[in-house]
Structure formats: C-alpha cells, structure tokens
Length: 199
Image 1 (cartoon, one colour):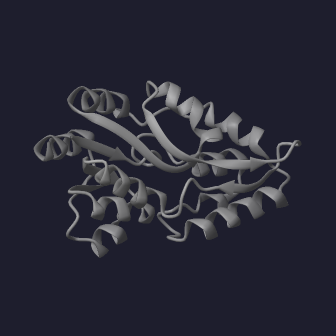
Image 2: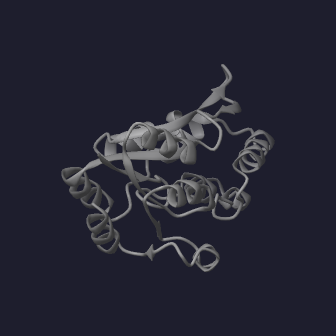
C-alpha cells in the first residue's frame, strides 16, 4: 500500500503564523520552521510574544477563519486522493486546523494540541509524539505502507528522507541548496507528476 504524506502550511495553505503576524502587525511572529529548525524553541518564542501582547486562541482563530487554501491546492489534493490514500502530517494544532480542514474537504490530519487556559490564553503545547513527522512515517512503514512525502521546511526533512520517495515543495533556496539530493518543485502539477511516477 502506498501512502502520500503531506505537510499542511506552505504546501496546502498559507503559513498561519505569518497571516497572524500580518493581522496584528507583530513582525516577529513571521518566523517559521523555515527559519528555526528547533520547533520547541520556535513555539516558546511564539507563546512569549502572545503573552507579552495579551493575545490568545480566539484572536488566532479569527485570523485562521479568513485563510483560504493556496490557489490550486484543493484541485491537487482531490486528484491525489483519487489516486491513493493521502494523510496530512503537520506540527500545527487541532485548535487551529479545523476551519482549514473544512475548506480542504476534511482530509485525514495528524497534528498536535494546545494547552489553553479558561481565559483563552495559550499556556503550552501538547506534541503528539517526539519528532512527530518522522516517527509517524516510520509507524506507517511498520504497518506495511510505502510512503511518499512532501513538505517545505526543516521540520519536514525527516519524513521526506525517511520515505521511499520524498520531495520539497515551495521550499527556501537555502534548504534546497543544503539538500540537493531531494527533488524540489514549485508548482502543483510538477509535484503531482512526480508523485504519480512514484506510485
């Protein structure tokens, strides 16, 4: 059985934190996993900024409600799901992802959860498991699946390199330069052709 594993933000939808940074004017929130490989460090940085500015889950969810999938993402995902099983493996949180999943037609999503206080303040994160993208792909492989993975950031490289076939999609020039052995694509039709060949 072949299974396609996709990152969410930057691949199918815009980066949530960048959209929120633009909404609030807090430029420092534009830092993403493309910039900081250590996800725990990145999230603590974000939570500190939220606390300093008295921002909570509701304000972020209000921004997310306005986010639409990237142009062509729905068509790409629909065509892919006609060919094989597809799962989205993301370091985002279920509290963020729900409206985005609705817009994408409710694909299967593996992600994390937030700790949220009664007043809506985000107090921490609950990661599903350590190095979740890599270890989720390993679990699928233990279950007898051959995986094909694609993502755009540092935190996707584990699952991309672990998979039988892996691709970068709309990544940074520095990541592409550091990993020249990983095929990189900019358009959905290019990625779809590569995945079809892998199938």
